[in-house]
Image 1: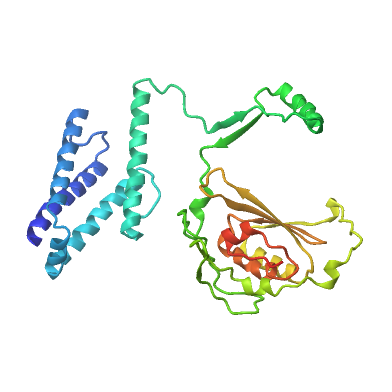
Image 2: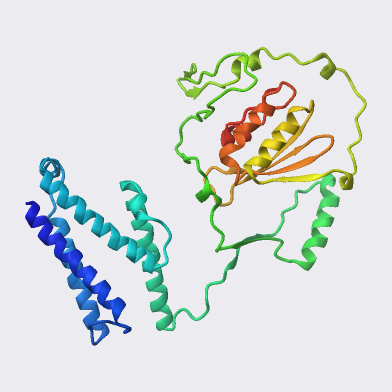
Length: 352
């Protein structure tokens, strides 16, 4: 069986390698073929040989049995690496990103599906251009939606209606969302695995700063039989009592002028660490979260604004998503209000 598999698969691999080397040596459009039809027929023949060789491989329990023979395993590994090398050459030739050699089995399969879709899309687009169907190139910027504002009747909304009328007089279509198709989805660069299943949210904390009780995360069931994970800071929240100073009326402190307040952009892990060190010395901070849901199933926080009496910080929550749990050093202090969206996205918990 090993000899048969090596012969069948080897013939396909060797022919493909020979075709690749010959095409590289000849500066012609269709090497070895006089017409497009002959080239297509030759390609179909090679494809049928590859399918035949693939179907001849054992599967299931037969594969487990033959894999117990070292000679079979040796041949399968050798030919498998050669096939992966050929696939990698095709992907590189098509300009597709992704190293198939350094992926597990499921990731290799997903990469092949994506590559096939992209290649077929290019073929269809090219055929449409040759047929004269696709006359205008696809725009990079497209209008996603447009809608006219609807006003709610009532005297309380009269001024808002007049303002809206002035705005829409010059722009009958109202607000429009313009997007660029060449911008990648930010989720692609997320280092944590996204799970969109309808399951209870599970805290991802690895440590528990400012804790009164060691970290313990477990699944709970309420009276209705609904399951949920406990809050990592449940014990601390139950013991929370507001400070005496927080219960007294105080004279509001005027904020500093905008021009006198430094604005710090936090886009690198080192900048995040410096910001955390500064926030540790504060007694009061303001936190604002900006949520994004245009290209997301459940949505995610994309921007965090943190202000002290002296500085304003804008944190890139997309780039620093994987390390924003460091904010727990500050957010778990008792004088900070808890914000739920920070909890879900970054494993950051705020104690009130």
